[in-house]
Picture 1: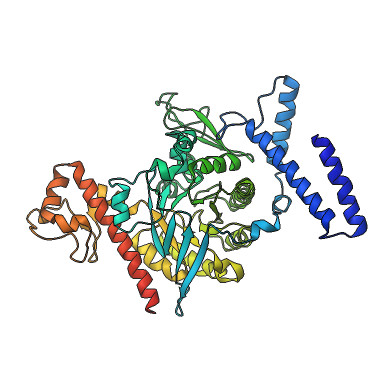
Picture 2: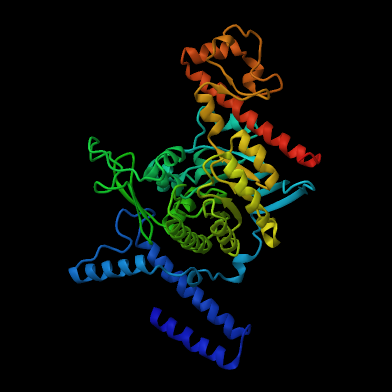
Length: 493
């Protein structure tokens, strides 16, 4: 049946060319039939593999001859990856506005590229510029979602990598998706692809990557084989054209992540905004390797987008712009990815070795997002939302910022105030009776507790401190963003 359909498509295409029938009913029929064949083939392929395969990309072959052929094809793919142009065409309907997702510009600053807007999603509105709290495992560290909502938290970021390992996409899907699983029916969610966490397995944290100058981690011979994150005694991550191999940090299971499988998982999660698979190279990297990494990310993101468009399920997909701090590669990435029907733009990859280099990057890159249709879509800065970076980035037109910054600080006894950070463990707070954390804050922590009691909780290692500190810091971040929005409207930024 499939061969017959392909033959029919060939004949009808020939007739179209012969009669110059562009735009007529024959062309429409050819397109519809081609779509039917493609969808049927995709469904057959998807039915034969799980969301996250622990096997090779191709089914395990039954004979040595087939195995040899499979290996040869894989080698050919690695040395001759498909060009970007071969996989970048999308149907016209994919470029049309979504009825379930849109960016609304409220005010554009006359002094800078700063802007105030709203992102409309199926589960609520996101005021921009806005802070995005990170709920790694579907939970914010130290506070309930009701407390976060009360603090003005709108968009929440969940990590696909961690949810993949526990509890798994199938459990979340059976629960009705992340919104029901987390019991957050009226709050927007965003999930990533897991690419950043895979990068972390290979190079450590961003700071560790900078300190090691991009040197790959190696296996630790003293660690047990069951829990080791290395692959066969080598680096913990193996990148191929098809996807990336790594081991679960929970039980050592070998996992194969592909652009298609990460989209399938995010479909199970059901977040309002999803992210395609990309490769995140370290800051210290040979330029040719960076070129290859950017091109691979483009191919992976294109594959992710194609899978997403098979069934959008009222989800928006942002691309991830790469290129490190290289002007030519960043420009290339912006121009290519913004030509595809993504719903928004995430700024990712290596963003510099410090805050100053980040801001320098944004200064020359963000004006490109003011051109043409690019200004009509939201922009997100991935993984960076400390106060200094936010205050310097807002004027360059960033709409949303995600980070675990406020909850991580609170766990270690650091509280944010309009007069600067305070370290509650300091003995000077032991007798601060009746003194709020922040005199202008209206969070429930500041309403009911003083610094003296919070000092006691922290010194006594009471779990309650983590909750009270997190509630305050999340409130502070949302207050900070509200102040930034008002400053833009008042013409101060």
